[in-house]
Length: 484
Image (cartoon, rainbow, N blue to C red; front, side):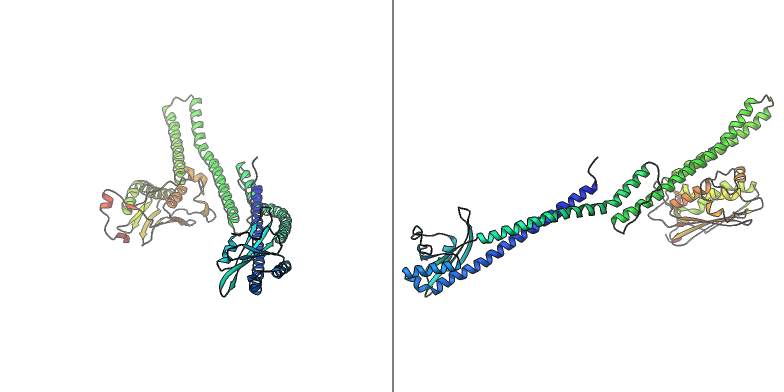
């Protein structure tokens, strides 16, 4: 099992905090060191200037009293005082060590002083001792006649810095321990929603799709939890729809298959020799086979519509498409004693998918014919504005009870199961219509009055981009029709 994200986050937080603490400590120590040295450099540069100015006459003519003066001053300021001539040669050493007198010093501080400017610098001797050099020129009538150099120990400064470093190390240890605890707490706080999402996802992987996780806050994790809940709801709904579809499909397919099986078995078991009887059985079997075929074809068509593959919309002559459908439906209407009337705005062109639009009209008119008795009337109306085209199919059939109206677009749903099967309905026609309308980006609504009839209204938006149909259709599109 890999390292959990909680420990990864905790480690990252801990290392980040330790890095920041270490960097801050180094910065503080460096700043303190520079400040201590600056103060010490300023002090000893001032002491050197005092000697060079106040004791200038004594330095120009050194004697035994001059040595005592230099020694006492050096003792008071805690530094070794060296007096040099204009060539940089040591002529007086406050410590009285004879080996140094007569040596020519070439330190950068000495060279700067003999050039006319005071200079300080920290150095580390070969023994490891840290010292400070401060050198200033000795002037007589604005002429450099020598230099004064102070050598002071810096061990006290670095001892103090060492003590501060040890204290900071101890504080860093305590802070690191607290940082580790804080890192674990923060990592746990941040990963708790992720852990909940992981558990819920594992439950979904095992088939329990109805999962919910708490939404804490409006940050990215809260948005992720909300998106997960939405996904869970949709997956659960899809699963319920799938199960219901399979159950409904199995039930719908079972009926014609059972009829075919029963009729075939009756033929096998009968001793009837009359061909007319056999023909009646075969006609019934053929009818049930046709019903089975319609169910399967509608199921396949509905499945293809729900796959949401790209749909090409082309500017079509709506009047021509309507005429083609009416020509197919008109014989059935006349045989059933139903009047079919079309009231369409002349010269109506609109971007639609020819096949889907034709299927919408066929299904709606077929549905109206099956539910409109002889002597009734079916009206197909169509008009368009700048942004929408509206089609309306109205019949004078038996109507739909209000409690059933919200479900008429569900798969395999029938208001009257027995009558719907007797009229050949599969319960999928209106579901196909709704999906086809959705693929156009439109909407469909239904209104009905019991005993007076039903009306379906479809709104098609002007969806772009689209192209005109090729061939004769596009060639006959009048300019300016429907404000295209």
